[in-house]
Length: 134
Image (tube, rainbow, N blue to C red; front, side, top):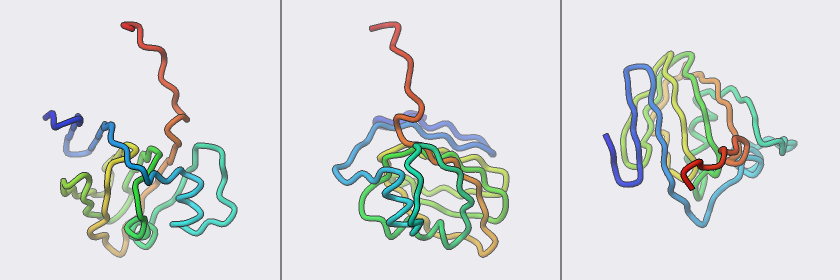
């Protein structure tokens, strides 16, 4: 399925999005960790591993703006319902979810036992090789 500026690949276990949307209020990773997740000594290394429970998932909703980093998340327990660029998605145990910088996201619901492991990475943490066609 191809949407405007989006590729969406979905199977029962994997949801992968790729997009190119930017907003003037983009939160870099270290800023997000300090302001939204209240991690005072947030590392500024570009890549962070995080355990995300229900409360931490909901903290994302308080953010004003969008995220300027990738998130690669595996749900290990429970379930969450998110709205990703106006599309409602249910994430369940063993699902893999990838977030692309700049796309609006809201956590609509998460079960009490929701638990996920995330790798959060700045946009430039994975530099792309030069385009051989250009």
